[in-house]
Amino acid sequence: MLAILAVLSLLWPRAAVTALSSYDQRFYLGIAYDLRRHGTFTDGFSYAGGGPETIRPPGMRFSPLYPALLAATATLDPGLRAGIACVEATAGRNPACPSRAPVIRSLQFAMLAGFYWMLWIAIAHAAGSRRAGWIGLAIGLLAAPLLLLSVNTLMTETLSLVLSAAACTLAAEAVQRPRATRWRWWAASGCMLGLAILSRPAFLYLFYASVVCASVVCGIVPLLRLARVRHRLAGSLAGFVAGTALPVLPWIARNAVELHRAALSFGYASHTLVQRIAFDAMTPREYGLSFVCWLPDGSGLGRLIAGRQACDRFGWDEHPDSFYSIGNGPLMQRTLDAAGGWPHHMAYLVHHYLLAEPLRHLLVSIPLALRGMYVDHWWGVLLAPVSLWATTRAWRRRDWPVLLLSLPAWFLLAFNAVVAVNQPRYNLLLVLPFSLAGALLCERLLATRSEATLPPSVS
Image (cartoon, rainbow, N blue to C red; front, side, top):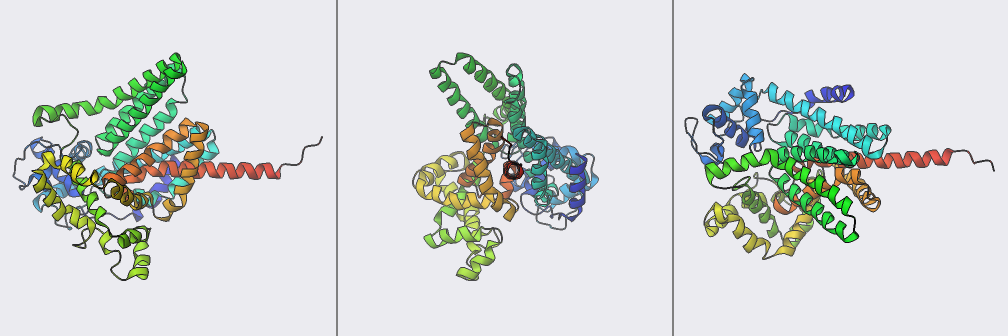
């Protein structure tokens, strides 16, 4: 742990601190303002409107954990309080708002250190080698400059990373523990996943996928007449589901009572989906260019191949005709009007876009998945095929610890590419399977080299 802290402490001062007006920080800061001033979880000024004196109604557009964490740490941090007040007063448009927030950033730094500690433990246990743990840690720390940017940004990335990694690590530990106590580890894993769901809604679909897969296994086992195995699997699944429900159900109950919607969120899912659907309007030429423009530093290559503005459409809102700007503007408004508002927006998008052209949507999801896979630029490009090799090898061997550390991140990568404007910051959990795969490959190469240097046996 001291080695992890030393490396991160050396790199942290070099990580940039973004203005509080950048990215989605204003969403969470606005909700934190209402939590502190009025004790109400709202949709913030970005979606509920109003100014600093407005008493906004309760909301459920965003998951509650990170805004609550911001509000709690602001009680100890005058710098963060000043930043929140400035963002609220200027509707998040002033890049000069005070950005000093040492308490929350120190806490996020500690979370990142905890993530790397779990990575080290998980890889060592999954590979059955302390050396593999150290190799995996060294590989993972190469991505630390990227992760430290998230430490300095007041968004959900660091919190959701440490919680989801804890869920994966505990699940991998569960299958290596004595059968009588596995359900406890699965319950702890579920609890961490439940907290991750409260930090980012996408993890709810990882929970659904996990339950479906486990239920299929429980359904197959009786066909093999392995009743005792089925009983153990059912107990582990029950522990996992109960652990996940423990933190999530109170929030859903709150939404049901206050807002008459027994759901995790409202409006967020269709908002992100319509942004993603805008990319389905790519021409064949643009589709080909997307594979180039979304490479790390690929914009320069795209301009060299197809002209100065070749990659403009694949950017963010700096270009009014970019797919993101269209999805976040005219397409959003047009589909909302056609659907009759947010309550019917998701059903409208699914019926008129996803089901109307499913093949086009899936094809466009391929370059978006690749875009999200390039975690820390070329580090992700190099390690992604190694991780695919390691995951496939683990599947053939039924190596459950490796699979449980790898498959969740790969599932989320594919899911994010289908439903959102996928990008590396949505897929930071890939650092875990990528580091694991690098360690397993190094271990295999070292073992092969050791066997090659052994003297021939004397018969």
